[in-house]
Length: 198
Length: 99
Image 1 (cartoon, each protein chain N blue to C red):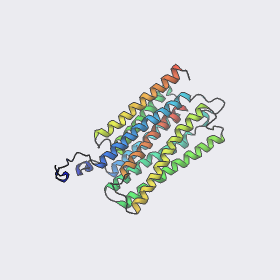
Image 2 (cartoon, rainbow over the protein chains, first blue to last red):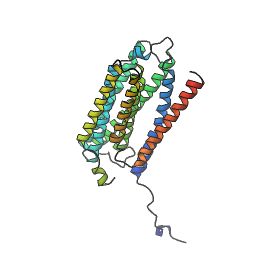
Image 3 (cartoon, rainbow over the protein chains, first blue to last red):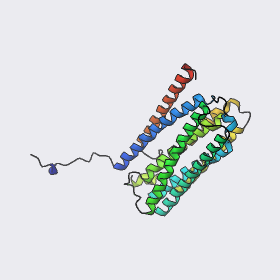
Image 4 (cartoon, each protein chain N blue to C red):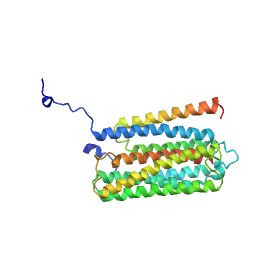
């Protein structure tokens, strides 16, 4: 009987970093379909306002444009965090990670303010099919941003305690991919949900 | 990732330039939404500008321009899936059911 220790095991496994990245891309691909279905639902019901206010009466485009700009710039700070991490510059990595988390939190605060204003103006989630589809679509996007802010904050703490390395399950590159994806989804939502409806 | 692959990645200066381009496109988008007289051109222009921003972020910030083509394929597959879902939902509920 052959001793198992003598049998050479061929190096057929791809590196774990590649496997994790593939997994993240597969997840992001599935997220495209998720947001695509919510967006299609919104487009179906965008004119079904019943007695409630419609998009033209209620959307504040300058305010949402400023929020969109903040989220877009957070993608810039995220890629700078990733670049700093690759250069092993942990101080710069922390600064850019915290900046990204703060910009994301600012975007979220803007969304909470916007939703509150809408409710005060008579647009609640149960007001009309338009309101339901709008709040579900933008609310799910906001939830994704909130998860991203939590991950970025965790990364910043891990960096401060010297535990941030590429072998970690969720590293800077993967969190960055998730964050950029949340940004590209908003690029589509801002155009289709806001700009094209006013 | 090899050193050669790292070397091909953009510099922070290039990232700032890309960020500036994205900011300019966003400003143009908002302006287009308010400009009167564009008529039926507003939607195609806005969709075109959003597609430009999407592509720039995906290629430069998500590094698809520099990474293995396999990663791009996953995103394209997701987008095709989203488009299929989009078409089926709008066709089924919008045209057939008449919502």
